[in-house]
Amino acid sequence: MTEPVTSNPQSQFARLWPWLAAALSGVLLTLCFPSCDQGWLCWIALTPLTAAAFTPGGPWRRAALGYVAGLVFFASTFWWLNSLADLYGNPWLLSLPLLLALYLGLYFAFWAWFLGTLLAAFDPARSFDRSIRNLALGALGASAWVAHEWVRERLFGGFGWNPLGVALHHDLAMIQIAEVTGTPGLSWLVAFANLMAVIIVRRIVGELGPHFSRRIRWEFSFTMALIALVFAFGIRRLLHPEAVESFPLRVVAVQPNIPQEDKFDHDAEEHVLAQFEQLTKLAILTEPPPQLVLWPESAMPRGMFSSERNFHFVMDLAKQGDFALLLGSVDFDMDAREDYNTALLLTGRGSGHQSYRKMHLVPFGEYLPLRPLFGRFLGELVPGDFTPGREYTLLHIPEPSTDLGALVCFEDTLGELTRHFALHGAQVLVNITNDGWFGKTPAAEQHLANAILRAVENRRPLIRCGNTGVTAAVLPSGQVENWLPPFQQGFAAREVRVPVHGRTTFYTRYGDWLSDLSIGLTLGALAFTTVRKIRSKAGR
Image 1 (cartoon, rainbow, N blue to C red):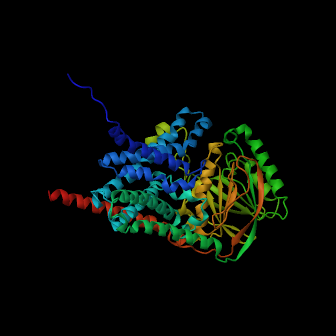
Image 2: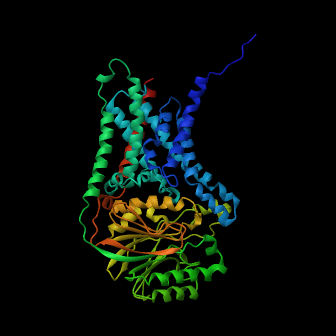
Image 3: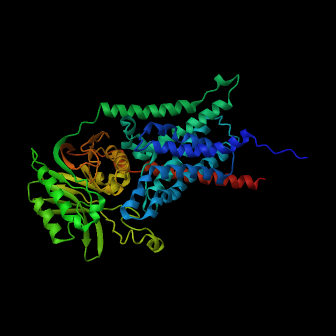
């Protein structure tokens, strides 16, 4: 007679907890960003996944653990993409966050796999008993995190939204180091702290015993000292900012709060134009009069040049006073048969015309990647492709003499692109955007959170004008001055201090140097582990 097989609860938990830990990391990372916006959680968010990746198991298991964490994070933090289903009347778009997560989760899978591979090469016994080895493991793991964020921002058109360092956007002291390292430096520091937290705990647990207090553990002291140094650098920058000669620029930002459905409705066009006319005529009556009036991206249905009616409408308003008018519109190159998403600046009561053509287009929004492959399924949603601009064109206001770096849509989330405007001499950064596509969701708040770091990285003020918000100014310190509540129609008249000669920061000059270094270290570590594995097999 055979006895019934009973499962061991401890063994079941041992098999299950790594998967729960991976999912927990995805949840904690989601809580770091708007709408929850609990950025402090970033210091522990990766510890469950790290602990899971350090457990025994094959490479595919570790990759799967990372994939679970990425799937949870990206599907939950980008849930607002499903609002496009109502806008387009297509229920299949409800699956867009999940489909995006299925792809983006691969980056987390790579990272978890890399951690396990690195640990197997550096410390196969998982003893964590040497400080130098532990610090190297943490530094290389953090470098791999920065490397995969760099790739995510660029591959297939790029979607680098919500990198780990952006979780610190409210922590003014910590983000000041971005003028040296950019956002990748913040991501590296947070990932390193998470890794070292797990490594240090594992070492302490493994060394508990009568000789525990005699061991020197430099990794704890080094990690805390590094965080303290970054914090001290930030405090010093905030308390003793560099003296920069500046002048006031009087700005009016118009936030029309037009539903995206109205922009698609040809019958609503006159109503939309009437709203712009009313808000703009009221705005230019403010005292003292504005020197720069901002309209958001895609301000008018079909663009300024789509009809003679729209063209004369804009020109008539531009003639109302001695101000420069910056607006977003579609621009057509009839000779090349190309369409551009453009920021237009009208000066001299409409007699002067300058334009910047958006360089970084939104994949699956402004163009369809791999159209021969995806065109059959998504061709109706993206019937045509915009052409990316090719030049970092500055827009010039004659009075007061000011060079603007215009950023269209989500270009203000891209550090490498933005810094080129500062490098070319932009004194102030201006973002015109339309987050109305996503309705009353956290999309606009997440957009602002990502944009804050651009002001710190380049030490330039950043002015934002959105259709539905967030219309605000970000000071060079990263402090946000909210001008208008989101999803409210109105205009804001403010004065912005613009540097006469903006300082060129280390990040402005050298860009994502830390990402380049991290990629080199990651590839070097992979080469080292591969060679070591080959030699190990050959020696058997």
